[in-house]
Image 1 (cartoon, rainbow, N blue to C red):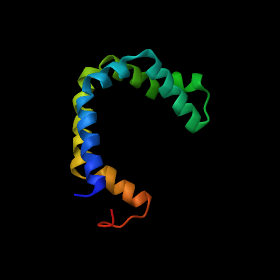
Image 2: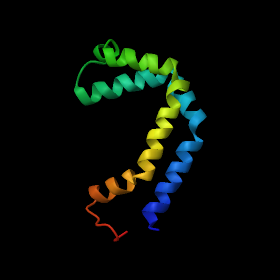
Image 3: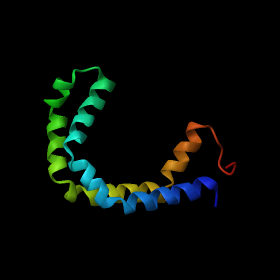
Image 4: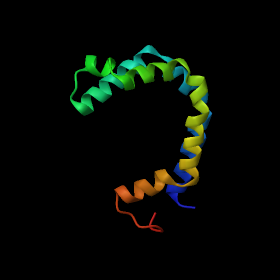
Length: 101
């Protein structure tokens, strides 16, 4: 087992254990504002335009129903863990060949 494998397993356990914290954070009012500000920063659009957009309205609906979406989030995290997506992407990003770490 590589060091990356150990960290990836630790990441998965910590994320899975944070299920209730995730719901709590998603539901906070500032989360939508941070979402809008982040999209505005990347796209160059004004925050007000992003806030009035269809994706932002969808995000508001997502916020209201975070409990319905948490299992989807956990399943996606678990799939990424089983496929070693984090460690493989890390290796790719730093051009590390398999077996070197």
